[in-house]
Amino acid sequence: MSLTKTYQAPIADKRWKTRKFVADYGVYIALLILLLAGAVLTPKLYSVDTIAVVMRQASQLGIVAIGQTLVLLVAGLDLSVGGIFIMTSVVVAEVGNGRDEMVIPAIATALALGALVGLGNGLLVTKRRVPPFVATLGMLVLVKGATQAYTRGVPGGFVPEVLGIVNRSWSFLSIPLVLWLGLSAVFIFILRGTSYGRRVYAVGSNMEAARLSGIPVDLIRISVYVLGSLFAVISGVVLTGYVLYVDRFIGSGLDLDSIAAAVVGGTAFVGGRGGLLGTIAGVLIIQILSTMVVLLGLDVEVQFIIKGLVILGAVTLYSVANVES
Image 1 (cartoon, rainbow, N blue to C red):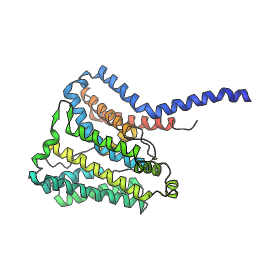
Image 2 (cartoon, helix red, strand yellow; image 1 turned 135 degrees about the vertical axis):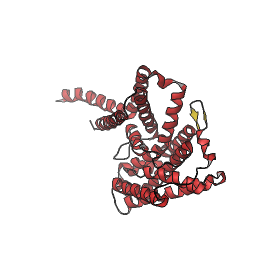
Image 3 (cartoon, rainbow, N blue to C red; image 1 turned 90 degrees about the vertical axis):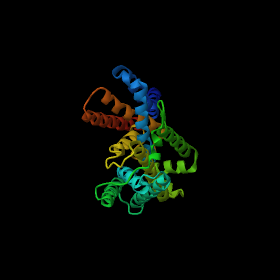
Image 4 (tube, helix red, strand yellow; image 1 turned 90 degrees about the horizontal axis):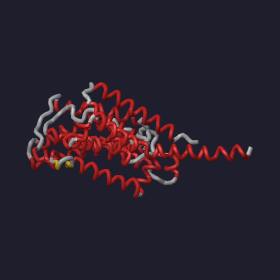
């Protein structure tokens, strides 16, 4: 009997280490494999122009994915960001009305409205106990409806030309990329090095235990929804500055892509596990896959199929990797 235990322990320990390695580093290995595959299948992926496009688009997705990661870490979900993109574009155009001196008030107004949307999400989830999926989906419909009602279905106004500064780039380096990486660095520090970050993980890991230990659970959950909306506004401003006109379909697909990037990066739907370094890798995987589909001349439907398979594969892999030995 003792001999059996003696030989089983090393095997169990090896399995645990393998699963932990997959959980911790799987997304980075996947990114490396994808980059190697890109070199073989689509060599044009490594041209300076293509890298510049990939990094610009990754930045637009990455900024909103920061907020989505924070929300997922407390076992939440935010579908309302799609409506915030459109709202931001309309607000910047309506308040700015083509006047450069009004760009700051326009952005401030968009941020204030975005914070209200996030506050509404947080209050619905915490005080009314509405499931995050239902609460944020309802808010998405509300924001889109309010925006269409205000503009009567025809968005007006002119985007201040000074906002076009977000187009400024130096080779593959651009202002959106610097903004994305800068914000990511700040919140990586916040999550890893501050009491607020530890509380976010504690709430996501075990909400009741966090409450019993004195953590203001509802306040933490509300705060991440507000932050998630603010990041969506920032991404919306970047997108609006890039196109320099009001677009009802601006940011289409980025809401679900931001969830996909966070999940592929290792952030769990159940909360308490994951981080922004993984999300950065997840964003790059999603964006590189999309670019490779275009370079290969495949139909757009293939892009959705591949994204779906990647998400399902990531969820399955992380689920298996985190099963206790």
